[in-house]
Every structure is written in C-alpha cells, then in structure tokens.
Amino acid sequence: MAALEFDRAVVRFGAATVLGGASLAVAPGEFVSVVGPTGCGKSTLLNLAAGLLAASDGEVRSLGRKVAGVNRQCGYLFQGESLMPWRNARDNVAAGPIFAGVSKAEARAQAEAWLDRVGLHGAGHKYPHQMSGGMRKRAQLAQTLILDPPILLMDEPFSALDVQTRLMMENELLSLWQGDGSARKTVLFITHDLEEAISLSDLVVVLSAGPATTPIAEFTINLPRPRDVAEIRHTPEFQSAHVRIWDVLRDEVLKTYRRGVTA
Amino acid sequence: MTHVYRLALAVVLLGLWFAGSRTGVLPPLFFGRPEAIAAQIVEWFRTGEIWPHLAITLTETLLAFASGTIGGVLTGLWLGLSPRTLAVLDPFIKAANAMPRVILAPIFALWFGLGMGSKIALGFTLVFFIVFFNVLQGVREVSPVVLNGARMLGASRRQLLRHVYLPAAMAWVFSSLHVSVGMAFVGAVIAEYLGSAAGVGYLILQAQGVFDVDAVFAGIAVLTACALVLDLVVTLAETRLLVWQPRADVPRDS
Image (cartoon, rainbow over all chains, first blue to last red; front, side, top):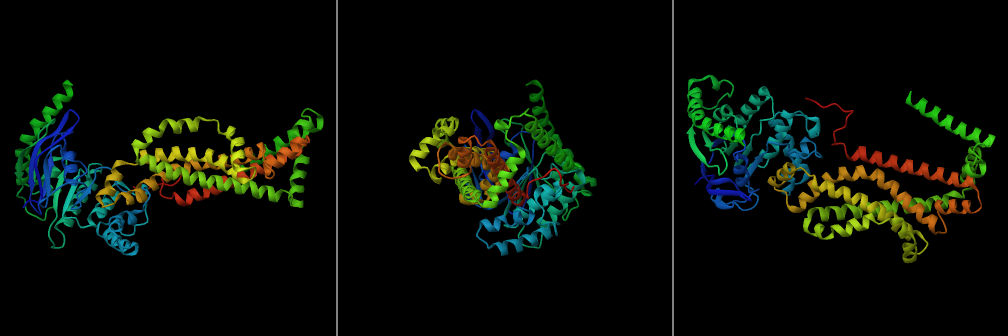
C-alpha cells in the first residue's frame, strides 16, 4: 500500500485547471521530490495531500484512507512563515501537543527536547521576529516533527535561506529523517531546485508545465545513504542523474517561459 | 535634552498666558488666570470636593471602556468569522457608526436616567465601533500560512479562535485602545455635561453657569491629567502583552 496516492486528481479554480488528472504513488518511507516549472501547481499537489484543498475530481489516499478535510497523518513544512508570531519558539513547538490535549508542562518539556534536536538549544524564549530565517525554519521543523507524523509534506521549505544555511538544513533534515532506526517517514518534497531534489531523494518526479499539470516522468536516484548534500553533487552518479532529469525538465521550463514571454 | 525643551515650552506658554491675563490682552473673564486655575485645583483636592465627582467620571469611563472593548472584540471575532452574517449586517453597522452618537445622550438619559447608566451607554457606543472595526480588520489579516500551519498541527475550530484569531486581533485592538480610552472619557464627560447630578462634567457645567471660567479650565486640566494617566496605563499594558511584536528599537539576531 502506498503511503500517499494521487488517483487522477483534478483541481480547478473557476475556469482554470491547475492539476489535470495527476496520478502519483509514494511508497512508505520513501523520500520523493517533485520538481517542475514555476507556477505549475506543485504546491497544489501538497495542499491536496494535506487536505487543505479538496480535489475537484479524482481522489487522494493517505495510508489507504481517502483524504477529506485536514489530513492528520501529515506534517506540513510551509514555504512561508507559519510560526505563530505571538508565541516564542518553545511555545510554537509545543502547540501541536497542546492542541492534542497534552498538559502545558509536558508539552513544553517535549518542545525543549525538540528544540535541542534541531539545534535551537537555549533559544526557546525567542519570538519569531527575534530569530534568523534559518532559526525559524528549524523551529518550524521541530513544530512539525514533535507530532511524529508518518508523512511529511515540504513545500520549498529552504528556498528563502542563503546557500550555506540551506545545505546545512538539508543535511540535518536527512539525518533527522534517517533518524534513530524507527520507521522512516514518507516525505513528499516540493522544490524548483533540481540539485536539491536529487541530493535529498530516492525518487524525483517531474511535473509538466501548467495548466492541467500532470507528472510526466519519474527518476529513481540510487545514491548511497547517508549522504552529504554538498559533497554528493560532485559524484558522477549525481551528474548523470542531473543530465537525465534536466533533459525532461528543460522542455517544461521552456514551455512555461515561452508562455510567459508571449503572454 | 528633550525634557528641558518640553519644560521650557510649558513655562513659556503659561508665562504668556499669565502675562496676557495681567495686561488684559487675554481678558480673565474669558480666558481665566493660570494662577487662579491652579488655586482652584489645589482647593478642590484640599477640601476633597473633587473626589466624588472624579470617582464617578472615572468609574463611568472605565466601565464604558471595558464594556465597549469586550463587546467590540466579541462582535468583531463573531462577524469576522461569519462573512455571510457580516454581509447582511454591514449597512446597519455602517449606519450606526456614521450616526453622530453624541446626539444619543438625551435618549440614553431618557432610557437609563441621569445616573451613571446613560454615561456608560454613550461611552460604550463610542468605544465599541472603534474596537469592533479593528478586530474585524485583525481577523481578516490573519496570515493564511499561520492559519493553515495551526490547522495542520491539529487545531480545532475553537482552538483556532483562541490561539490564532484572538492573538492576531489583539495587536489591532491594542492600537485602537489609545483612541478608545480617550473616547470613553469623552462619552462620560459629554453625557455628564448634557444632563447629570455629579461628575467632573457636571462640575464644569455648574462653573460655566456662574461664569467661573477659572473653575471650567481647572476641570479641563483635571480631566486632561486623568486621560494622560489612562493612556499611560494602556501603553504599559501594551508593552507587557505585545512582547512578541517587532519593535523598531530592538535589534534582531541574524
């Protein structure tokens, strides 16, 4: 059984068809990246899986169950700032357990432990506006992981970070994901950065240019784990995967580009 | 240095007033005399005559402020989250807000009598709309990412209200409290002025009736001082409760 399964999912906004019958299966414990041209509907795919958006046609199944309403099996790492600005780092991380009815003291203790794990030891008292972009991403990560969701949805989570911080966060994400030997989480990772996709994933899915986007190709990445995202880019295997995928992606990017130029 | 300039400015203005009243440029019958005004204020506090009036005016102000704020927050949250009801009520709300509410004071006096009730009612109508519109704005401008974030963390509708909408709206409420605390005061004093048997507004009305301009100015001075103190209290509450907001004078890490 797939952890996440998109079954001919269609999303329309008024007259515009964003997703045109997208089918995709993500196996349990697999790290899958989705790449595609700007504005092709990558985030729409995630919002469907999260249950924040309902499919106009077709359906999405999460661990075998049809998604209807907010999908509690998923944690969602947003591209934007999802931390509550009125809560400090610790209370932001503690929010999930508190919503679930865990006592405040217990939730805060768990949150402190998670802050340590994402490298925010001693920063629990800081409010989001007092933290750097990288620290906020770490807090968001801890906020999501504290609930231990079997599926992780990530929407270009590191796109706003500078290159060094980004590489560091990617490595830390991988080590958290490979984790302590318990069952690996299923990850659906959206990015427009092909290098990021290859260095993190088991499988890279290329989406077609919009409108009516669908997945058009899948590439298995057989790079050994654990990986160092910075170093792995220099290996010949990485290079050849990049060439193969870019060959497909380039045409879609060009289609989007031409449409943008002529429009 | 700013303090020195401020003090100097106050001294100069009072000095000009004093000199003007002495030379007859500012006739004391219309403009009062600063030293007589000061003497009147001292007299009020020495004899204790002012206390019951001040207590009544402040009680009216605080009750109008509290009821207007609570009413505005609750209504703002409710209508902010029920767009359909808001669409129906919108013209009525706009009409009620556009109405010159001071004119309601005689009607409130009919309904609630000449006591504190009619004063609180007028203050309420002034405070309510300020807070209401700010909360409405606050609810509308809640970041959709923060909202979806909380939903993905499992927040129920009720928890969204308590942990997302309310704190987001509070920032807007606080920015409106400075205006609304002043309005509560205006409501209380105007209503007293238009018909009452006690309060600082009543005191001013009495003084006016006997052409005691000094006492009128003394009343205004006391009210102004009280309004400044209330504003200070709001500022203190704000800095305590809104620590999470970025402030220009606090540098951020990066």
